[in-house]
Length: 172
Image 1 (cartoon, rainbow, N blue to C red):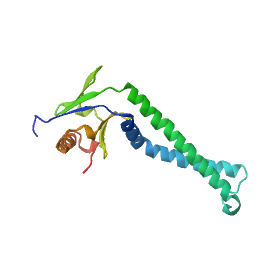
Image 2: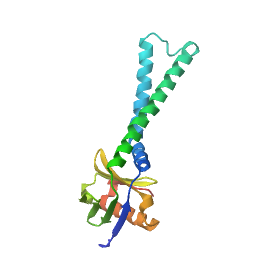
Image 3: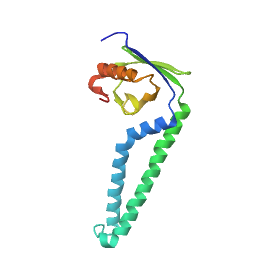
Image 4: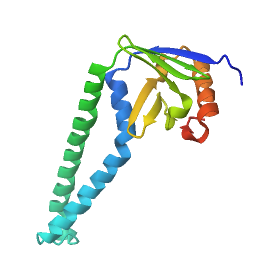
């Protein structure tokens, strides 16, 4: 391992960046909530006296029920993800992040921090982002488009793999 590995990235995340990462982070939980809503809705319909298994007579009612839940799911998705992304964009400032053997140093016009690699619970790499979890439900993201070239992305990937091992979920 060389001690001089250092990767600097200057970036300013957009609302779209936050939307993409929040959707990535929440999609499994949201899908489970949606499926639970459908199951509970079917149980509720059954308790109200609908024979939910009688598709011939109740098929249109069940279709309307599932369609309504789908619309509510999409509206809830918009409310959660897009509203939160807008709020995040309002408070985020342009940043410069320096990755080195020692850790991750971040600087914005109003704050700076240094975090050792051991302080990250996990790091994920998606097609478009690196996502750094310092706590279970708290993460920072750096879109890949802000790296100068592909070799910087490869170098960061190797550095993360060296420092976090199995706690890093990286692209191949």
